[in-house]
Image (cartoon, rainbow, N blue to C red):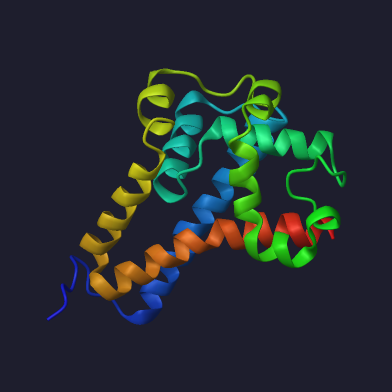
Length: 179
């Protein structure tokens, strides 16, 4: 039979856990990536900053410098042909459903990273773990979810985590908000 996981919980508990984990991810994107790193609108204690970097590595595989550079370029070139994820340029459907791929494409532009990615973390952990192995955190999160919650609930929680940011942040907030 299926591996039941360390915790055997009712369906509603798995739902609450998935929502709590995705909420932490949204907070990490909003506070750490957007407010702290991109706009320098607030200062975070180094321990809090590192927690968010670690959490985002686990739950999204996002590299801080890439996300910040793409978002800064978005603000600098908003609603123009150079905006990496403008629904006015790419269409609301594409940004809503495929916005994450627009981010990925823009993140692979060395000129964008050099111009807009300054001041982001460049310590040993960033160079040798987070940026070097961005998908390893996501794999680790998948394994932890499966270990803790079992095959079906763990896979469902992981799927929700993987869909959450690309759909809600890249799609709905960036796409719908700018449309």
